Image 1 (cartoon, rainbow, N blue to C red):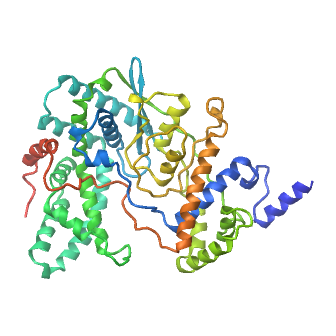
Image 2: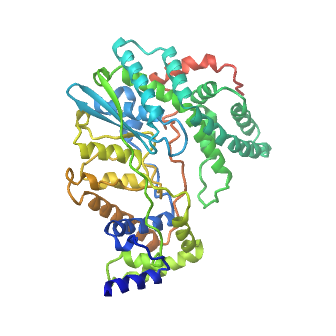
Image 3: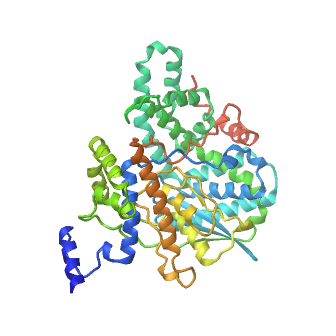
Length: 486
């Protein structure tokens, strides 16, 4: 009776309706998720972007022809995942894990929203095509790159269309700015004429060809220069953001031909994994809501729960946070993040593949616990990989927080994995999230600058194309000749 009265009192204080179902703070699973999401929502409010892109230096900086076999497989899987992600946004993000079995290999595929009914047949066709390339063992010819690139673009029409639609308003801003830069003379005029190429009503394949051909031109280098953020803090409407976005989107339009090159090159050296393959999809986890806010969901009370009881640091952090709140309206934004009607948490594709291999005890090819994904991992996925006892290869990451992230529910698998598997992972993640939030509050620093989730897809070594890339440049130069070059 005493416990029931206490429960009613706390519920009324929090202005929550009483119901037969347990509230988050009275349910064991709910308490665990509340302890995880409260600091996560706070950190998101302090700044969604937690750092610069984390890249795989070996894969990005090493000529593909010099990659060891294990890393060649990784590059191949990443390219497969990329071309399977046929639309822009989060729904079709694709992850792939390669299982080794005595009779052959299984490509396990997952997506953020179970969109594998379209990707599985495409991946099966693509791998079959790659197998033919591997057994023919002849030099890659331009027509092969042309054909494969066209098929990948045809599969990804929604994605290409989205890139074009995003590019149009960016181009308008860039061209408008350049038109007012008459004092810059030929440089501004030349860039303006070059940018007009992407305003032409060209087919997707032709435009992607041209984008790939131009990715290392002097005009792309000029866009990079104009898109560099100034040393002083600028607002989101600053013109350098438009130039940076234009360069990024042009790079993304051309990326399918770069990936087609990589797929063909890798396939010619990976006949061992393409013989007797299977493609299987991983069933998606059901969606669930994050614990809702209540009367205890305030900045002060969240800070007190993030620190040990009676900690001497509580008042200092609360004071700093109050000062930041006055500048950035953190309290309002913090609660708004809980109330977002589009907040439908889901298990991200790479986590689905990770746990499918771990729970099922599946063996990775060459015992390399690598999960390929069509996009760099988000901040939470990165922390999940780091905290997982399976010692998986840490993914590249754009280090942005998504509040629609959630861990998988593994209760039904408790007979296979240890009892506190999920609890220990979330506790380790929560510790890292709290540490990051305390660091920012202690220093009272503003959020990191935003950046695109995907990389532009242009190597830094820029000016001269590699031998592999010459294959594609040769084949597209004739088809792109109709484009205007200043």
